[in-house]
Length: 622
Image (tube, rainbow, N blue to C red; front, side, top):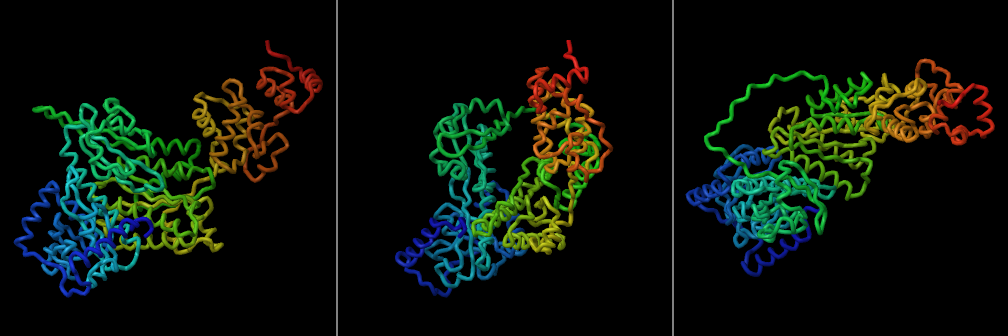
């Protein structure tokens, strides 16, 4: 099932059916197969769950709200599989339950057959039992996803489960598994931080296309550099290594870095290669040293200072009021509508603008980026896109991420295949419906959508390459990034780019400065950067002249050198004459007055250039 109902799970379900038939002698058509305990028996079990999870019920309440929004029922069970909390559509622990699923129901495999609760408790993993996978026929209308809840040391506390009428939709199974897994991990992480509050805590994570929503893990390290504990999600970060096997091992042997070195870099992220497997990212938090009796002085509030644009956006707008206006408009639209579509030619800075906008987000904000140009019409690509969307929804819905928005970025959306367009339209329709209903509690409230295209998206609609209904959903908040030839002072941007590339303050000859204003730069900032990089390689000192640009501009014609026709469409002031004498002087300066080298650059013979030196009365400087 697309990677989230694995062959191992199918084997485990088949083994469960075998036990139900051979060991427990259960009948598929049993009329009332689920044993139900009295409320007096349920109450102490609920108290035990509350105590074991640290007394915090906010996670369960948030899960209940999400379950209600998507038409699911939340079931919380203890380690014996007895349901101690049932919530659906705002009804908490109702006596009648939901479709026969009630408080006190016992989901032990020996009594209830194959089901999501028993499979999660038995396997210790997130498991979805689809309708046809249930052993009892009365349960086959439901899909049940169960995830175990563990304490700081990996002990079983219970399970959390989402139950729904089975629609056969793989996206439902994926969303339920990941939402529950994130919640269970958050519960264990809180318990782990309390249990090992006097140890160094190292957050371990890894990324990549195949690990878009990989759980991070916590590893506790003592003063001797030995691992004294780890959360269960460490197996996903370290290719199958489990928490029990890590306990008692030296941190350096596992992560190739001495834990004492980490003391000097708290709260920083380090990427460390491992002896086996992919590199991992490490974030270090040192034990908190409490000072008894010391009360920090309250700090007076600092008045907010108005600033036109953040520094990262100011840098993008260098030398152009129109680009500054586009950056400001994009910032306002993303903040007000949580939707943004950027249109602009290649190299105009769409990706850089997205990165600058997201850079200002709250700490911990997560971005899911999908390049639509890499998608095809295969099932694998459609599943990958569906997985990215569902994972972003899961992250946005998590209660511990309050204040940290999650962003979905669809690059080159104009190149998205038709099948993927239908999937995106379905997602945006659901998002729009929640917004119009004023639903501020749903997972969509902190999920933003950004898209980019190199061509006007309406052109793709007019040529039947892009769905018109998706166009109107995406482009409600649209910003156009002007190409470089439409910006006011490209020479100012060129000087800033030279400083980035070379670390020096570069000046331009008058002819070179005017050429920068006339070059079409169809590759925009990307092309200008390449041209300047090559020009810096030939320039002498801190000055770039027109000849340096002529040698660097691969396909872009330069005015004044019989190549101005390609720039005729670009409105500009008349160019001063770049005569042969100036060209020879520039060539000689670039070659450090090596006459033979200057002749080769200009395509002249040595005798010819010597005659011209006499004609123009050019003499070697003393």
